[in-house]
Image (cartoon, rainbow, N blue to C red; front, side):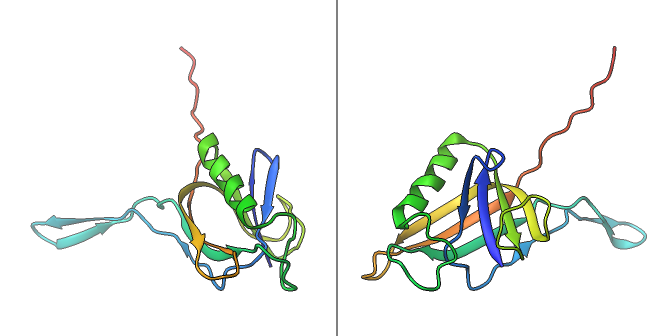
Length: 148
């Protein structure tokens, strides 16, 4: 399994060098409960909410044997993600069973996202950058045009 983050149709791609120990996708529903006179509480099923995911791992400063990618070092990853935040463009999260980035391969997750939070810092003497990256699903708005 590999995890990729990218912007602008793969203009820049980050392959996470260290996989998180786990990840969970939060996928909810916008259901409403109403109190009625004759039936008590009733539930109306709403629309799905935006999915979210939090990734926790580290960006290595050194060359470790277990790295999934060696393209960048520690702070370079942080700088790229901070730059993406400033550009205010959606990013694409791909969690793939393949080791090659592809938009149409056997992906477990292929989701456009926004960066909701990015927390990072050094916590030991290695110089590795430990981070928590929270992403939320981004939906491209498709408006229907009507003639007058």
